[in-house]
Amino acid sequence: MIHRKILAVMIPALLSSGYVNAAEIYNKDGNKVDLYGTINLKHQCSKNTDDDGDKSHIRLGFRGETQISDLLTGYGQLEYSVQDNMSEKESNSGSQPHVGFAGFKFSDYGTLDYGRNYGVGHDPLAWTNSLPMGRNDSAHANNGMIGRSNDLVTYRNSNLFGLLDGLDFALQYQGKNNTDKTTKDIKTENGRGFGSSISYTTPMGIGVSAAYTSANRTENQKSAYLGLGHDTAETWAAAIKYDANNIYLATMYGETHNNAYIKNQVDTKIVEGVVNKEQKFEAVAQYQFDFGLRPSLSYIQSIGKQITHFNHKELYKYIDVGTYYKFNTNLLTYIDYKINLLEKNNFTSNGNISTDNTIGLGLIYKF
Image (cartoon, rainbow, N blue to C red):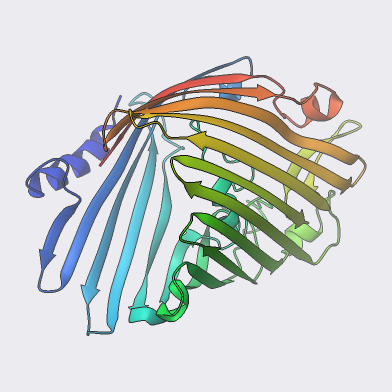
């Protein structure tokens, strides 16, 4: 059921735009506000209870900009996500802000903003993050500069100051995000860090992308059982893609050091921390038919190495087969089947790592 609070926001905004499919809700005297949103009605079936049942959610966002001068524009964006799979009486703990930032655009000289945003380490990972059912294993939120995170200062430059189409780069700084001793969460904490990314896409649709991030670890993280004592968390990733002639092919390889969170059991004690070294490989192939069908095939794998007490372990490994069907620019449906290749053992059982297959069906409305 769509929550009343969300409807209370969405309906007046949509009515004020004049017609339902409009993105622009205000444009006057150099000030503009756009509304966008996604309603994803999704049901999954799996023996693993965490992956089974109603997984529907709603995302609603606003983008605004104001013209300051011929060369300078101010802008901001706010996006909020609400889980649509709870009753009205339940506490909606799945509701949370996705992004919220503001900044300036300096003509061809780039953009500079601050707030909750995507980390630059996400840039190459995004090229293979296109499964119909969605996923958050390689770039979950609040994981430094890999997924969405807080306290980010981001500079982005498109087309190399207007000199070379397709060449983009970004620089990013993240402030310290630490929890107090009573509510520590080493999975989402981070120290001060920096990151950068670069990508180039040719007119023929061939693209390459790479990113690197490095951040100090917090005292809570350094004192955890897994990954004990390491001072910094580092990540890097590189990706290549082909996106032309209705064909989409992409592959990504990346490594993290003291950044991938795990939780497991040693003897009778529950321990948590990070993998000393993680290697991940992803590949995706899709084809867009003219009548709206878009089949998708992916292979996703992550291997943890030099894990305290456990040595080398596979963290996730699966094949994903699915397809989208696009009715029009606003409405699409999908079916997706995740074939889990992990074997059930003490490590997966104690770490709550799923070894079960999952099938998902969904209907998405975008505006």
